[in-house]
Image (cartoon, rainbow, N blue to C red; front, side, top):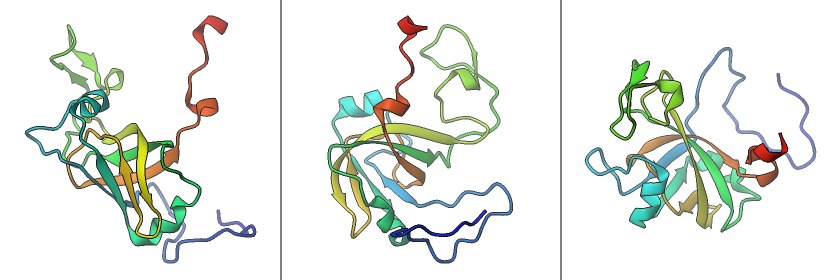
Length: 161
């Protein structure tokens, strides 16, 4: 549903209201990784000490307003080379097969992955964000960027339950 704009809001021309589930990639992730050497998770990517960057489609550059260097953000990205047919997987790091939804594997029905990363550089004019690390292949399509907020993204303290 399209509503009225509030003062200061800006829309992207040419994007119509979706008539069903669709994705519009907003850019891509540039990383040092390929299929032969990509870390299995963001922790291992950080251990490698190799940063990466996000390159937005220039039309989305204004959407970076308000982000700052040092800020953590959540990247949602489409693992375009992952399998989509595995319901149960047998990764090497666990003792027995597990259901796909019990794993962080990129192989899943909808190959959306996420990583919480820290902004190391920011060029809002060019739509480029330097990030501390990432665990995906170079050129992976970017779905969305969300700010990581402690008050929203930290699970509740289990001791308080």
